[in-house]
Image (cartoon, rainbow, N blue to C red; front, side, top):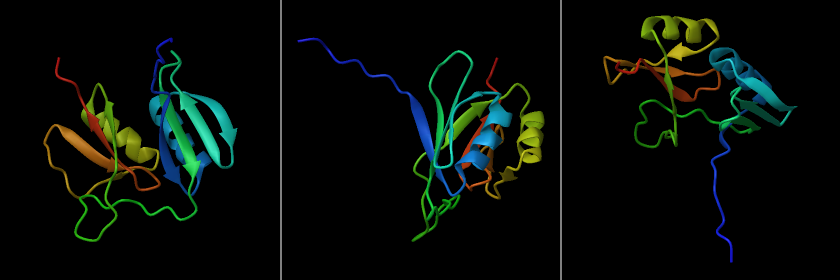
Length: 126
């Protein structure tokens, strides 16, 4: 019997508009469009590593950040490294992200993508 191997292919984000959210991340990350359908869009980095997919969810409810009692909680978020934190925040906001009102760390910025998913930008320590 041969062992089955597993490889993470993609992280999937639900959204009412897969193409629009994919466009945001495509511009932000510089990744390639691999699948483009109204209900399913896939982005991958040039090196072919695991990417992001965007799935149509008509009833999408953006998570609250931070979530309070009874509010939609964040199930996962993306951590995105940038060379310059201030420039990264400015670029993300120019593409449609919003700065979250709650910022738990001085060296990380929490933003909300156009569909309301929280993601973090950080500059790795050198």
